[in-house]
Length: 479
Image (cartoon, rainbow, N blue to C red; front, side, top):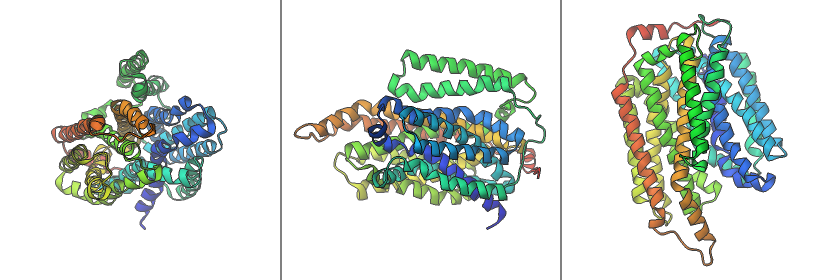
């Protein structure tokens, strides 16, 4: 294996673990609550991780560019490993939530640094394929999380969800320290703008909090509106600070690049659809078809497997056809598959003839989209902005993912309660087609979001200029 692909493999393992832990705990909520109690507090095992992860990305990206990507990657991975061990041994719900925050901070440190370590190893013309693989690994992890989580919970216990990370982290730390080269922004000062951090970190955290909790609190609840408004005010101050300081946390000149704007905006909407569709699939299998956690996870496996198989080839196709065209193809496949869910699924399980073919269609769409969004946002950036650009893209997609999950929950929560009560009644009442209408309408909404994401990319995306391509290839290592 060439050195470039060794680096890609090392960083992909860490990215897989971080993405996996955004979704793996979803199927274990009941098991954790039965063991530790306090089910209301345990909602923060999922929510707290996503909020802290999203909030830390921009700051961590700039720290990586200034202080070194290898250093940030290894420190983040070590912290993530410590957080995983603390989660596994947590004796109370509160300590489990706090340990998840440690995990999330470690994940936020390593994610932008990981892609910034990959980009210098590949010439500009080959970065689309490399980022396609990197992005597909993260998407695959988020999608197979319920499958892996269901198996571990059913066969072992919920603590295995966290202990499984540790040996992979140790291996990656050893290999990363041995193989990775250090790189950083050669024009950066030795300090990070702490005033910008004081605005940006809580700003993103409050916006993400409002999005994540909107399903439970309500979109017009005072808590949701207050958190969202405060977050937007802080982000306004953050943007103002970035426009006047010499070495900002986020270089606003990135938004002068059409490919950055298109990829980040399209990626935001794509992530809304992706997490929303995935949540609906899991809910449908477990609530409507009454699948177990393991069975529902395995039933959805065909989608992420298809996406993983197609990611690298579609990266090569994007280099020939253009990123916007490939993403539009992915959006059309995802829109078609999501509409088919609303048209052909019913209360009686038909996995092989209905659910499986639709999952493969959706997986094909993800394979076209996930990798192209990552590469179009990051492959052609100046070397000094590798981690910053990656952090910007990941932050937007993380907030989009949180919004997609909250939207799916708010559209179907009353139906879930109704169906669950029906199954527990005596005699059990099977769901009718009218009972399932909220699910079918939700799928149509997410289909429209997918299509809009594709249109945004086609309308706004412009290929990088020749000068931008030259600057993107001017990579320097510092060791």
